[in-house]
Amino acid sequence: MENKREILKVVDLQKKFHKLEVLKGISTTFHENEVVSIIGPSGGGKSTFLRCLNLLEQPTSGQILFDGTDICTIKGKAIDHCRQRMGMVFQQFNLFSNMDVMHNLTAAPVRIKGMSQSDAQEKALELLAKVGLADRADAYPSQLSGGQKQRIAIVRSLMMDPEVMLFDEPTSALDPEMVGEVLDLMRDLAKDGMTMAVVTHEMGFAREVADRVVFMADGKILEEGSPTDIFDHPQDPRLQDFLSKVL
Ligand code: ADP
Ligand code: MG
Image (cartoon, rainbow, N blue to C red; front, top):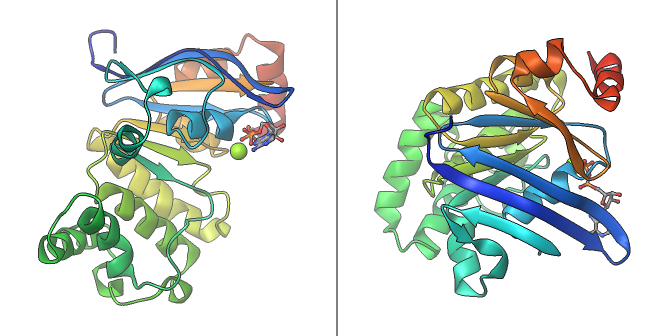
């Protein structure tokens, strides 16, 4: 990975909510085409970290270099532009419930990127076909299963041609029988070379798909390495303890 482009380089990132220190100096780099899984106990700061990367939270200090530019200091329109280049997928899908699938997919590219409605529809149909949901273009979110909703949410991100995708526990709200279809789609994205940061409790995905696993607890990265390093040779006692509970 060393000679790959550094898409996101995070340097000593800190986030406080009033007196509560939630991120206590996070440093790591996400390289182009890399899939990084972020694991760790609940409350450790994983969601806050992803939200800072996407500027949904303003970091208290530190740097986030996105393709070389420190995005912690940008303002206004530049923030919107930066967000457009990153996809974010949440546990709770966040689809617009009053719009059918097609409009969920075309709204942002048309409004924000100035794409024509017909180009956006064509692109949406292509992507829907790719994920096996071409027949659901007219459905409303309430008519979809959880697994379908999350696959649509991923397609909605892809409509913007993101340079990196951030996933925050994308399968945690799903019934067990639907986890597989979402993980399969994420596996396909990884194969296609998408740069991905994935907060997940799916240790199988972290082991099999990720190039690197980051263990976060108590606002810090306590250990990171290859899946083999992390799962077969964990060093930090907190990581050993965490794995003994989840594996
Ligand atoms: P994780 O995703 O690893 O479970 P979070 O990033 O959600 O961890 O939370 C880390 C800590 O930050 C928790 O103690 C949580 O209560 C706190 N926290 C998160 N968001 C806020 C907020 N907007 N205001 C105050 N505290 C927050
Ligand atoms: Mg979280």
